Length: 269
Image (cartoon, rainbow, N blue to C red; front, side):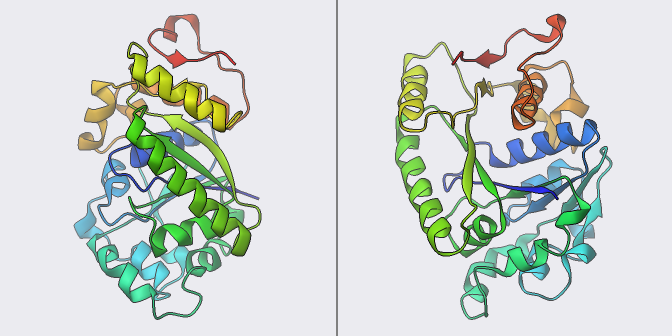
């Protein structure tokens, strides 16, 4: 049975899509069969896998509205073992349309249940809001990865998300848990960054990934080429960081070959 992981944070620009894309690509390269569900109307995950949105005939919107089966919206990407349910601008009005539908918080779950046996991992890239689309993802998933910046304002957003997760767990999804919190665009030279990490680790012991994703030019460039960073520049710091994060997801030792260990920010427990 697959593991379903939502990548969520109501704040925008924290690396949700980047994390979903690059974890999926790494796990796919390891031989795991992976499905990404792009549930953000911006469609960044769709674009980053080289899918042209104008060519998309069926999207996450159609799945949520019950117009098609999720299997009919799946597109195989050019990258090893990774498929995607793409997003288009039609998702922008989905919040309003969902309000009047039956099972409005469980619609994605009902669809995902029909295909989870086909994959080892399913990642749901959530929009930057705690609306019905994100709630659908939280109801459908087993756990949540929370990308966040090491900034003090991010702590308030984390608190709001955790409260939402608690509500969803209490009423709709009893197995829901936090897979982990991953710091993105991280600069360990800054005192404020280390202070925020320490604060989060205090309140969420054993829930903060040791791997920190650094700011990296190649990581920023890769989506414009329609590629995950490991296919764009495998030797970059960004690719190395997501490889290490992949090790953590798989419960493996945080090790890379000696020649690849430069520039990865990790903290010892």
